[in-house]
Image 1 (tube, rainbow, N blue to C red):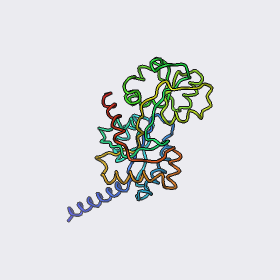
Image 2: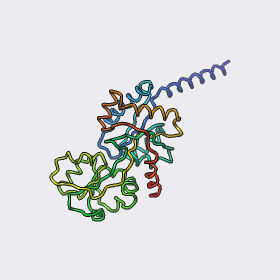
Image 3: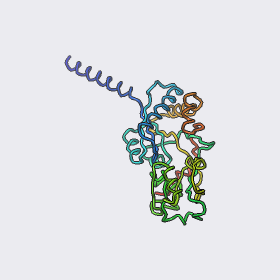
Image 4: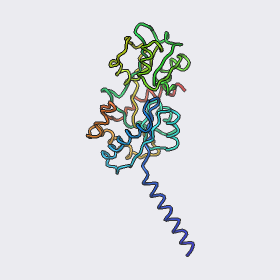
Length: 280
């Protein structure tokens, strides 16, 4: 009888612990390498976004929680420790962790009518006639946190920024551009969103692009194929796709300059995977 009591107690304890674990929010890891956003601000924004996703997707409140990092190594640690079913990552993080974490792109953002972007190396107009002329010069920007991504994808393996430039990374693109305008930098590498905002900045000198990358896919939601079911992936993708149509979701989409979330284009992402793998 005593043995049965012990077994019953153990069984009840197991059920209790299991129910607590089941009630904990599922983590969604968010990676924004090189960004100026603080962890607190990012998690507040993501909490609002996930709240809309839960509402649109029919999940109970607090089904999901966010874990944010603007540091590449910090992001890799979060992905390894939390083993999330879903994550919102940069293309570089996806490519680097794709095989080890069984990642599959699910949804991409569409911004300014496209789900791709181009990177631009800008300098004061007339200072450089070619990319080769920038070698050895001081180059700034926020994007160098992902140095391998810049080498393998943005420059397609033809140039290694860490070896060919004197890098001056910055947390804010505007600071790098002001330094360029003052002559403290020779060039700045901008992503698509930063380049689109260039025309609105009050700079003394006119800038032009010394180099423009090929179109590069924007990355959004990825899923761990081993930690999520096909049903989960389809449901989350639909919730994100419907988010910008929701009144609250529309405000968030406008805040982040997102037109819509669309199904990930495997055809657009595959060339980037090829470039990444060839650059190993």
